[in-house]
Length: 381
Ligand SMILES: [Zn+2]
Image 1 (cartoon, helix red, strand yellow):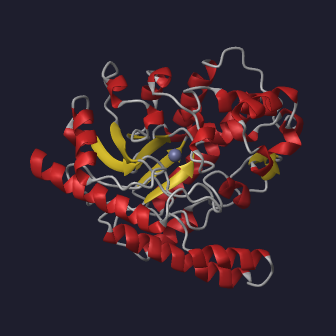
Image 2 (cartoon, helix red, strand yellow):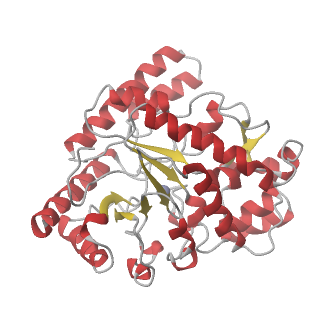
């Protein structure tokens, strides 16, 4: 892979969609635009997202996730075994307690629910990759829903237990689904597959995890058990796969745009479990104050590359390159320079109707990240 030796830059995945794409999607929903016409809008939006990343100097680009409703929902659009269901259909007294406590806008949340035997009937993201490859010479990162986050969102006792009596009975099939996709993405020329695991980020304060467990009627005695289960299902999905860089992205959620709904807390509760992940890179949210500090890794040495979150995607203020350099230097007290990558905390769009940044702000932030990488390379090479 043709990358700078030090401080390669990347994105976590999504970029805000252009206004004309959102309008086209609405027209399509009203029946005023057919599938082919809508596809040409998506195609143009992906070309633009790639070119903007190239102009911003990003070393390893994504397709901007322009085609996906959200990082989670897009798999349900591809597979008949998963069906998007409104969370309000699955509520019960215990779940409602957590909704009230977090003041969650529950009426607009949907989950992909297991309603059939999970198998990879069709590729999940290979088509996106193939299209993107036609428009860039840069190496491409493909973000993919992580197996733990998919699993904990999708097994519901009422709706899924006739197929998989217990949540753990679905683990093999969920891991296999993603494993097959990672291999297919490697064959199709992806340079990096990133598994998105905000479910792990929910271990910081457990509020959202408790809501999910209650809603899906999972029986878990000790919430810490979830840590081992998360590591296990991810490792099953990636173990032994060579020839492609793999990563796990951990954040505290990116939905909806309001920060008050998101998990809060540093990485301490997830360590050292997180370091048992058999992936090349941990792509970590670290710029937002909600993520705590990087110092927590001091007592937990690791060989992983660290995708260091240096851009707060929720803040409209554009970071200066100097500020980013300062953040990286803090991390350099713990990690070797050749292990550090630079990326934003998360995607810039949290699901289709909810961008977290404007396109202009996202672009300016990525430019600042590139400038910071140049300054760091000058100093450390
Ligand atoms: Zn994220």
